[in-house]
Image (cartoon, rainbow, N blue to C red):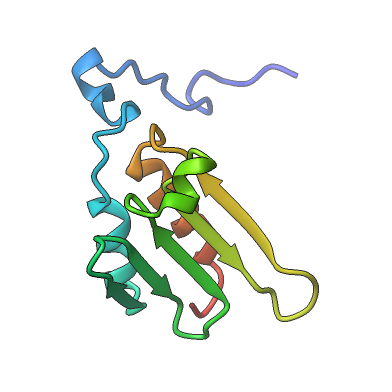
Length: 115
């Protein structure tokens, strides 16, 4: 099969400066802004951890920079999902995972749900 060049996607070559987000700056802002925009319940703790729950209560996102139990597993983000049917599942992200990547994961997770 031969595809016309006009049907193929353009190849983008971002500058090195355009790839800054590939390195974590240890800032939770992209995820927290997304959760607030989705009208999730977001609670800050005195220890500077953040816990968020989707409106239907089936998805939890935790930003855990000051949680010793998370440190021992080298994680800072925890996403827990309880599907309407089936077993709960968890995805965790380490300290070096950019918040933009976690925000993308959460956005894709809730893209087709009423959360």
